[in-house]
Length: 300
Image (cartoon, rainbow, N blue to C red; front, side, top):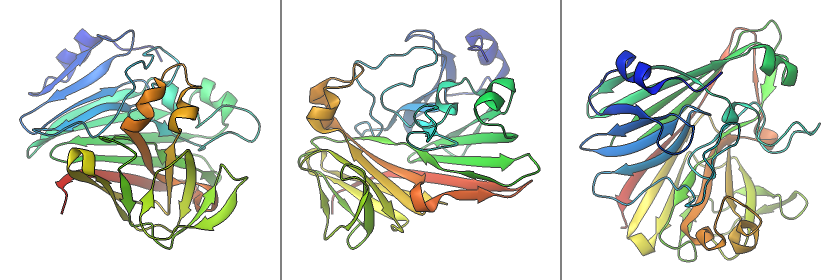
């Protein structure tokens, strides 16, 4: 699907606080600006690129040198990883195929002080060549005092399908060296930087080097404590029995063409996932939901 026409989108979906524009390369973005929050969402991948509540610093991080090009994921934001998370066992690419395809904009509405955006994508001849299943995927993005995302997978085929998936949230921080995560004490994880060894976290999680972990059976709410910005970000998850925590650190960031190595201090990924042991099976005609809510609060 090609990028839609901004003028046509603005006519079809006229709503106070919402506009469509194409100002950073070829990608069309839905731009939300209201008294309570601002956000940008690319139609390619239905990828949230920016979110900041009124009077606050950004919650969602995107790289200063990110590439906004067709068919390539943007470094940052909230990529939708589906129907597989991580590398494909047969070399079909990282994190599935929907994050680099253009989604259909299905509508928008005001709900209280929030703007709700809806995006959709379904199988076609191109997706069937990669993943031969009938599906419909929808993403609802609620932009208000908090940011809420809900991904719905519908199995439209005659056979059950198993998926791994993630809302791959890149969270902005004032200084990763000072940040910690609360809520993972005693939770076991798969350490992807140690050949998949299974370990357990003790106490609060601190950052002192590269990290790529899949936490299994983690609590539904975690807290990212950010002393440098004097705030906490509460991360509530739904339909997610696993959480990925990832930072490339400076050494890993240096390997990315679309990230300045110094930016590693500005972000950390804490992701609502169904990954590894937490893969989900969707029966014929059934659906599964994966959601996350990000809320900013002052440090206690």
